[in-house]
Length: 209
Image (cartoon, rainbow, N blue to C red; front, side):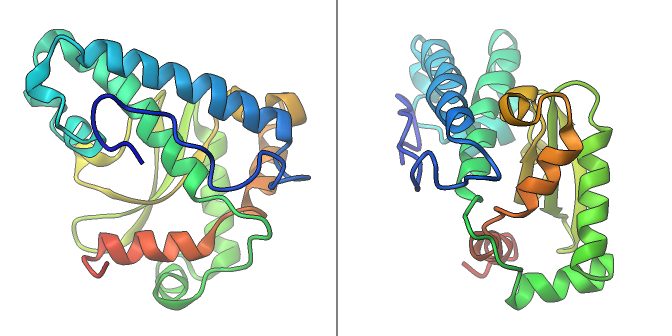
């Protein structure tokens, strides 16, 4: 995967129809090939005249937004955020989904009381986003799981939080199939969460990967 400028839109790790019937093929084409590609194109254009930042990874750009030139900050927040958030979202989908196992399953039980309770809280977070944004499962500075939301293409990275899962609730993620019924989309998203990858993300956040 291209980790620095010029960024490239890498193929999905599965076929466009792999998440059917929960997330439809047409949405995946548009979401990956059009929406993500636009963020990549915009980010490359932004960084083109700034050679001093062209070796920075997405994570470095986002974590250090405050240290960027003022004229770059909003564009990087929106477009590097759009690339990071979409890549992370696509990487953490799989059909069939299964259930969490290992350390993450234990942590979910300890923090939320179990998988069903976690789903209720994650769904509530996704529904609470006004307009466009994301709900996240993150690891905080104390190593504990937490659920949070971000607006637009903001990420948890500048807050020092490490992402485990993200739920994209921009309308383009679900409108073709679910229309305005975000709750139905979220229910379907739970059926294609890649819990194996989420376990890897969780272990990475704890410094174990």
